[in-house]
Length: 231
Image (spheres, rainbow, N blue to C red):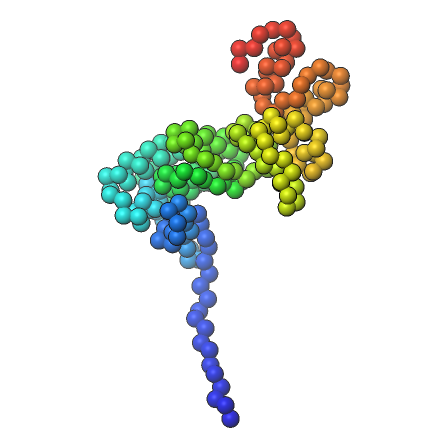
């Protein structure tokens, strides 16, 4: 008789992935961190400064440069007053900013964000977007953002790609894309609230052109009144 083979399987260890610089980094600006469960993971136990500094330390950056870069990034993200706080003591929105700061401190030339404001209240959403825009302007970086918030992408983006199924349905500037508001709605996508309001005005016979930001709406309504906009 053939001897039976025995396979010994190691105990299963549950892990959770968190977007954070770590020893698992495989590319200069792309990394994942494994955190054992249950209990607090390292992100929760670490102080804000140390969490943001982790990626630089893993890359062997000198401590003087780490301090300078981390403090600069914390200020960009509005987290400098909380630099010595444990991450577990921060709010949900602040923890999201810590995650983003942990990437920004690496000075990537391109960042891909998937729904970065999901689950945040309006104030938290504006803070996160302001942090991202501040970094983009300071570093001249390219930001690619996946979002269902048309109001956000209308205000912040230079180029929009609209996906319908597995195909690119539209590719252009916000002006070029949002002038097809009705087509976007027919695809099952949303449009900025202000665009929806102006479409309704057009249907009511008001001679207004399509807009997609509040600033544009002020311009159009001021011209309609015969005044001069100071926006």
